[in-house]
Image (cartoon, one colour):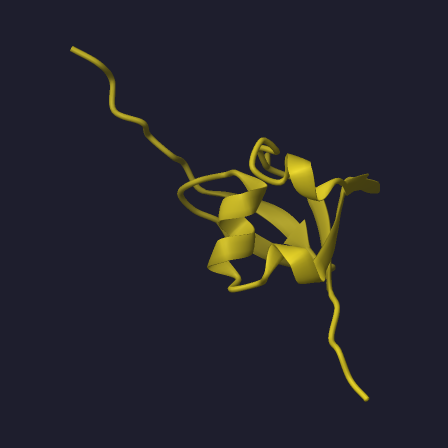
Length: 75
């Protein structure tokens, strides 16, 4: 009998504020939960830029420092 995938909740710092992560801990899942478009953001995790190609394989952990910059067009 296989064990069910059990996600626990933990806290990261998102743009300087505490943020509780519940469920899937992949960066791509957080971006989707925040309703951000991956093509219009830049992400820094623990002071390292995360390439867009790595969003789905990047797993967040308690205490991570995450900065997400959303690019806005204008004119």
